[in-house]
Length: 76
Image 1 (cartoon, one colour):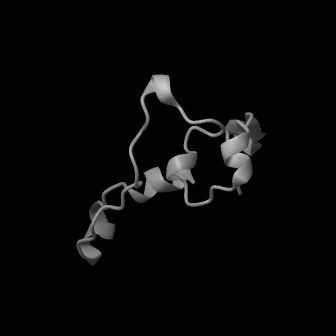
Image 2 (cartoon, helix red, strand yellow; image 1 turned 135 degrees about the horizontal axis):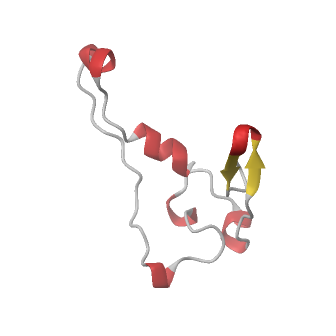
Image 3 (tube, one colour; image 1 turned 90 degrees about the horizontal axis):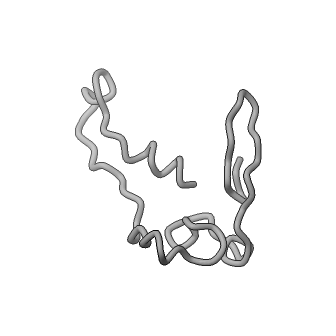
């Protein structure tokens, strides 16, 4: 969800921009201070896919195909 939010916040350029102006999407909420991360997943207060496990348990690193990594209980 965090990466999807970042990608959705990118401005449209080139041919995509010619289809009309669109308001940039933002990830709601406030980024916590480094000294005040929440329990569980650091992104959970601002995540649309948050469930109880996200609040209770820090997600471990999961390798993805083609050398990618993800830290999310609900990655697709």
